[in-house]
Length: 309
Image (cartoon, rainbow, N blue to C red; front, side):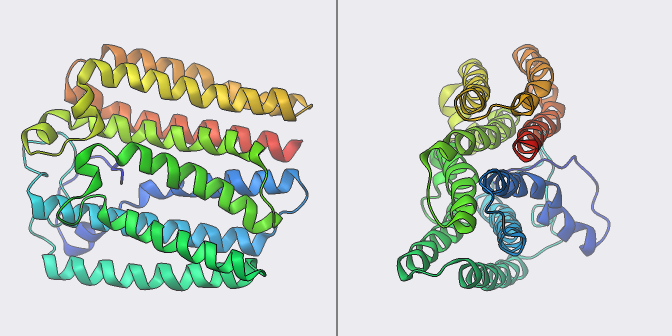
């Protein structure tokens, strides 16, 4: 759903496919699995095989989302040469629609295989098997319909809530459940924080593209809010993410390492200051990579604190 690569000039089909795969988005997908696994480790129920299969499934779903995003935006004409963000293989004419469809189908198949393997290893109860099969199908559907179809939800301003749900609540809490075998409401605090950090990345992506998205009918939440309110919203979600982690640490952890994530606060604060003062899309562009790094640092520090506990 999110693009964090810097622009480059495609000179070969291989580079075009690498651009469309957007491998640099994978750490964000992995962060939620790491968070859920760290929470499982805190309870003494960490299972490395389950964690690895969850990482594989999450990575394939992210790649599926990236490919479908390229296909949908290219088909609708919303990725134009005027946009500040990078153009991908389809927009540059290096990848045909038929080729991208085949790549999407292949990635769906691989995602299903990885998901079934994960469920087979982790789930014992029929209710769990059925429940995670449904969640897997919903995840695949969400990855594709963000920009593909007659009414893609990414064009209606619903991408942010989808990222919170799938990158946060389902990924983190689901990873914890698959390893622990039970659900604990307390995990929803770090799950919400991880989802909000991913949402902040999407918001910066949409803030960068706000002018071209608005001109081409892609009504992201940033477009609907407008530039200034989108900046205020950015401050709100990052503040809420930090508060979720602080509340969890204060209520549940007793070791100083539970507050390691505070080391990321200066980076987040600097980022918010720069977002507030970035007046043009070109000034916002470098802040996307900065937001990704800040989100990853926050997640990694918090997960490390859990492991040290």
